[in-house]
Length: 394
Image (cartoon, rainbow, N blue to C red; front, side):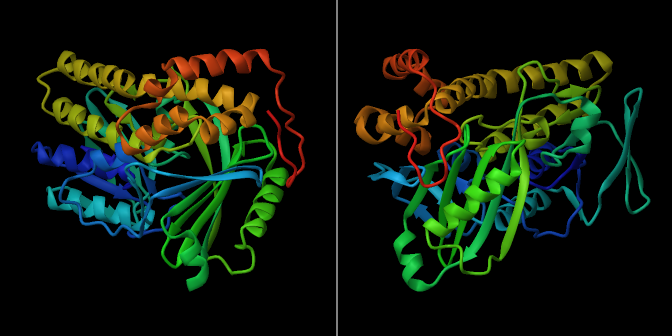
């Protein structure tokens, strides 16, 4: 089998398939390690999905969570069981790729997909190196701009733009952020900003619906300035699109599967995707191991159908619940901010989610959240035109 993309989904799929005895080739267009725009916060669900013996440097662990409403009404809460591990994606992806290679997968970096086609039970992959490769199965894990996703026909319900900077900080600033992350609900519909500490670097960014990049850049500039991160020259200053799958979007086409960002598997509200990538990559690796050893097309189709059912069963409820939460948040971020920072049960639920003790679906099914959702539906929507620096009010 061939896996395209050596991020969390692709490296995991390659490792799992190789562990099951499947001859596996992992292609990555960049040279490993490579920078990837990402907050790099590993929640409990991500940590639980990592190989137990993975060698990975954790640069900090969040123990305190600061929430604010567009720079106002700031409040810091302490986690009962801190589990957001702060990592650099370049290091995470390199460690997962090393684990795939140790399991027996062949890794070729600097190799980009240029063509893909299927005939019968064979998938042909062409690369920028002039290679023509053939396999019984292909996993597309080549990110949110995936060529494999276009081939499969992935459809999205939500597309957002994230702008991020990796900012070096002095010892005093590093101390202010050590063990503490920031989530700020922003002035644009469905937007927020974040600061994740990583020793002598802070990862800071903002995200909002695609379509108004000028306003989002203005929010980013105001956000960095407000938190004293605007003067240092960033190590990286990038942007990328995040995509959330429609429930009816395909995950397979013949012997080609998609996983992670390529499948648009992402939390609608937090835009967290690493846990989705790791879990869908594991399922894709197992499905392809079955597909490759299938005695005929009926068994091969059963393997891909099972993959779709497993992804929908495991991640579908999470995406549905996060979509509902996103609608609530977009309509009235002030209400959500008040609930999180002033109602201890709401914070305990979010803390339990971060630690991996519950899911977004579990949170959204509680009486408290159902009541808040009903209240939000009766309240007028908050203005989406509030200028930066002015609070949005519930």
